[in-house]
Length: 154
Image (cartoon, rainbow, N blue to C red; front, side, top):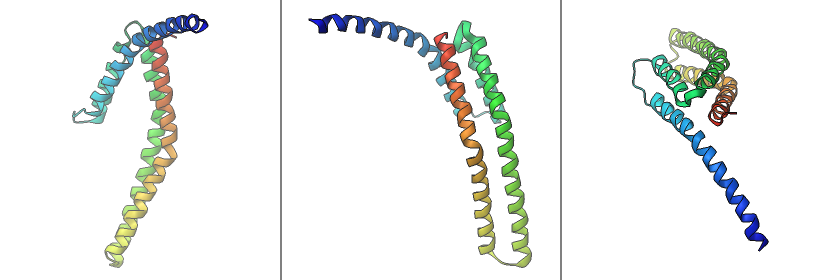
């Protein structure tokens, strides 16, 4: 008998939570669709695909569009210096790799030398990713949490 009394309030709370989730999930489903569109974008440049995503997300949130725009702006501010660091780091690796490859060719050391140089270049570029990736993932996590707050109205 006490079991029946406790089930009814729990079911009521579950219904309220489901209703709030349904409202929230429409906006977040729209964002998922925008992400899929960006991922499959075949426009000539990544920038055009990213711009379409950035312009497509805020309308997903209706009246909360300014909130979603603030999330996008914060994400851009978070990611831009990290992406710049990654690009610079990888460019330095490539420059060193090209210089070392020229040394191999000048010494006529053959494919073993150039192979070692290529592997060193790949490892160097991978280290660049390893340095910046955790922070870029944090930016993405913060972005997702921000959008969830916009969708929940809180």
